[in-house]
Length: 575
Ligand SMILES: Nc1ncnc2c1ncn2[C@@H]1O[C@H](COP(=O)(O)OP(=O)(O)OP(=O)(O)O)[C@@H](O)[C@H]1O
Ligand SMILES: [Mg+2]
Image 1 (spheres, rainbow, N blue to C red):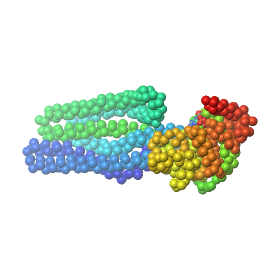
Image 2 (image 1 turned 45 degrees about the vertical axis):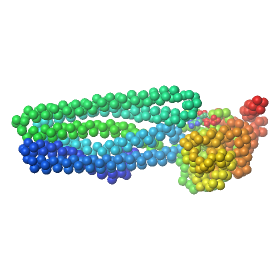
Image 3 (image 1 turned 120 degrees about the horizontal axis):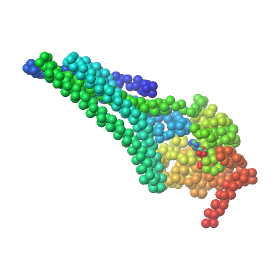
Image 4 (image 1 turned 180 degrees about the horizontal axis):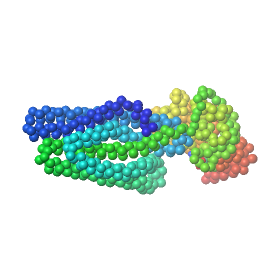
């Protein structure tokens, strides 16, 4: 509720109009059975003129009810959609403020469900609440009072009917609300599987995993279905139950009134209005139970949304001016663990890089190369020790200082749907065509961009599916270098490039980004053989450091990697 309150307040005007309209509706429909009773009385007494008058009055009230209904629907919808939109965009902003670590805590696909499905639940509830809630007590009290006034002697019938109906409603709702929480979790499952499948469609197809995927999806979907059926069964018992009780009460009323007609002839006209109120009473209880179940379900969703809002971003940037930094890097006894991981991933890392140097990082897969590199642009914070860029602890720098100093080409870089140019502008918002050509020349992407009809304005599809692995890597490098960063990190960024292109990229980097400190993570030692210093990682520890020549002498591990690679290339050369 705390989550929803500010939003409810923001749309108070629409909510007020909707509530007033629904109150008008309630009174208009309460008045109808009463008018009907008068019409009956007039007919019985054969007063033509009065029948006509009352008939017109009936139509006016019906029209009033309809107009109020339309107004109510329009303004409830305005409030509901408005609230959902505001909630969604705030939630999105909140998620954008999250650091990597925060996103990992929630899992991306579950955040998506919260931003879509859960917000829809809330929207549905707000709509229903403003359509119905104000009406329920008025209809309940009004119908009850008017029914009692119409035929006072039948109070016992009303009491019995209400007790039975309320009992059915409570039992049914209890059963259903148990399923509501569960069904929301199942929706999470189905969404996650569908998303994974569609995003990994190439893997699914190439490993002929369609059947397995269908099975997995079907099983998740069946579980959801089973719950939905249980809810459906409960409903399908409840609804006829309600109406059965209602009609039984009606029949009893007609029976009893019919027998007492000799004593109270005026009751004849009251039959219609009494049964009308009976029905309205029944509807009030049904509506109340609907709202109760709807809000139970929406509150589950609201809770899930509230969790995201309550989560404080784990990383804060101090509010200091953006400054130009030199491209030096320093790790001072740095330890790092991923959130939730029991073991630290990096242990006591120590090294210094002077501006303009080229640094290579090598090590077996899983040795912590990516983990180390991502501490430089502060994607994560070190758990112990200090990471410095340009001589300052990264935690004391403004986000802007870091972003304009450090560019990282990720191991699994993503391009966004849009155009090539729009992707490049992520690296430099005011990039000119000249900047783009310059960067594309360095990254060796000019050649294939030139072959595209639209050039830099060529479309990039979702998940950049219309580019090959090597093209994607080149575009990611282009985006990385375009802002002429002081520190450029390339995490396995040339793995999909042939040896010649890789050499051309390196030569261009040497030539065009002379003062840039480059950190190159590479599987092949050949890629970093010329580095000013090479860091050798093993199991999260920095086990050796030096130039290629030095390491060949001092580090048996480095020598081993080098010799394996040389041998392998030797085999290739012979083949
Ligand atoms: N997001 C993460 N959350 C938890 N643990 C992670 C995460 N990313 C990596 N790890 C763990 O940290 C360790 C180091 O991973 P890292 O990605 O740094 O290796 P790497 O040297 O870059 O390997 P590769 O050469 O395969 O890219 C691995 O054991 C991995 O399981
Ligand atoms: Mg890696």
